[in-house]
Image (cartoon, rainbow, N blue to C red; front, side, top):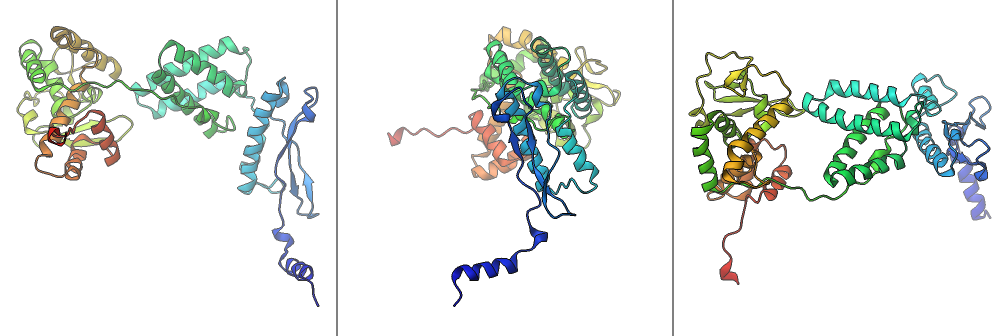
Length: 409
């Protein structure tokens, strides 16, 4: 009578297929039992197709042995261990001719690119894919980090010398000098920087993604009351018509200030009542021009289509400066001609008009429609890409308020 052990052995023998045997061992770290005078490395075995035996492959050192602390060596080798495991799962075979995968494995043991070269390559890539305004802020933050690194690392340091701990120290210094929001924005740009390095096989992994984001309480622009808005419009009608029209594009077409700065004469089609808006990092969007704004537009027919709609002196003209400078110019002009005369606080700005008129739209629409119907219509007007994004925005600006609930108390 066969025993259970005999039965299981028989079944295993029939099911077992050498071709399906494990092809490699899990990569491990050799740490010389903590001895920093000896070489540390990542090692693994792979099944030799000729002998059908697992054989030890060339170890990966990855520049770890130039570091003189256990923590740093383990940090570097752990990254290489994880990356090698990933390549093996994806099908890397050291016995086959697979140029791309071999290059990846070799890259684990390279890491010779200098900090200077790495920064130069990433900024060249980012300049091609970011708009001028975004790139300017991005370049500024990255170069500030680069300048800080020069004080912390030697002149001939490599990109692999930048550690997670080093970046955390830098972010802490940014936090002390500025705010949690600026620190988080810096972290975002550094993560984008290191992700580009990873995408181009200049580093193994973007460790910035594992650095936490600090909780912040954002300051938002307040909405204007009906009397405030009407008084400002009446004041600008006499004192600054150009600024008033600029504000009406924000108010009636619900554009962001920098989007108004981007407008050219050719973007405004009065006959079809269409406006072509170039949003940040997005294709051109087409929006209608409501009649309330059409009626306030001057005659644009004799203006050059390539001229900017808004300039400091007139509607339609050349203005050779960056979008950031244009936005800052109108913000300062608003402060001089509106904020100071009306004694408005820091929470009131050009953006407040967008909040104000979206709130107006919502409150008028909800009188005759359900909340879902109102938000569905608003999405077409405001340009929010998702209902969730619109709902969050409406909550942030307190667009919907409850009716008086005294009778329930």
